[in-house]
Image (cartoon, rainbow, N blue to C red):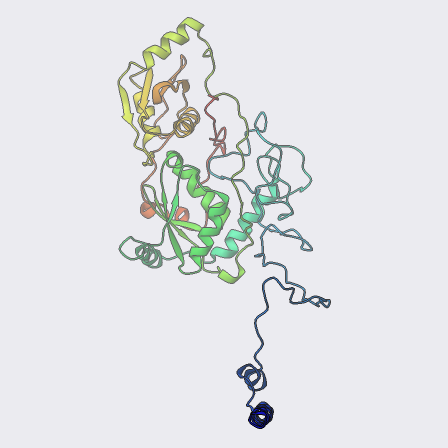
Length: 418
């Protein structure tokens, strides 16, 4: 029994030794784990725990300086640049046909901020215009240097060159007809504005003549519109039919040598002018003035004005009506208040007459006590076309300028002023 027990113990010890030896051999010859293979062949790294700081000792990083955000260039940014200089020989105004240098305003509505922008123009804004003579002028008076008119005349003669023949003029007018071209400049209630000069020169780059359509208030005095167009652009009106004009640029005009025209960036506020309608009409009492205004609103209307229409025949119509009637009423329903105030101002100067009231969108005018009919030929009816004008009036030679250059009080009137 003892011998069997000892033998079994030896067998168990030898078996355990064999197992231990085999385990050592297996452990020494076992292949590497999958994680070690990934680490050797693919540089695999286990993800960092979200609760563990990936950089316990961060090194100072050297970041590149970020570029400032892009800012588009601005026309108002004049740092390091000189103010723009223009050699045009006339005072810069917002409107050349609806304002007059002869009429002085009684005040300004705002400080004298230049509509051309701060530091953009070497001329100082007086509240009414930018004078061409003295940039340091402090007055709102619109007196013009007589030398400027002579300079404009010489510039215009140099640009126009030889007069057009009848055939050349007919060809240019035909090219500007509606069925031939769509190029057109619209002249509205503000008349010939300063920025419109730049539009005219832009059209002259592509054609020798440009068609201009006049509508609204400026058509009351078309002669003044033609004069101002020729004076400010150095061109020539070669055709007129109602409110349609054809403006010729001249033989010696070069688009690359066009004058420098600084643009107005915003519309300036209109100055304050005296009231158009007085509380008591001169020569009448308060009761007579009230009675005349009541009677004027009751008389039949002479005509009804269409919005943005052609009013070239309005002045002769009122003159003829004064031969039989003392009070004239013009229906202006649908027109803006400032529009029929401008029309009333022009009637007061061109007929002439006395303004009675603007109530209920009506213009009521009175011929006055000492009214005398105009003599025949004193106010000739303007021809609708330049085709029948004399040769010296068509081109070169004489200039059809108004006898009195007063377009009277600028036609900017606010609602509280009459």
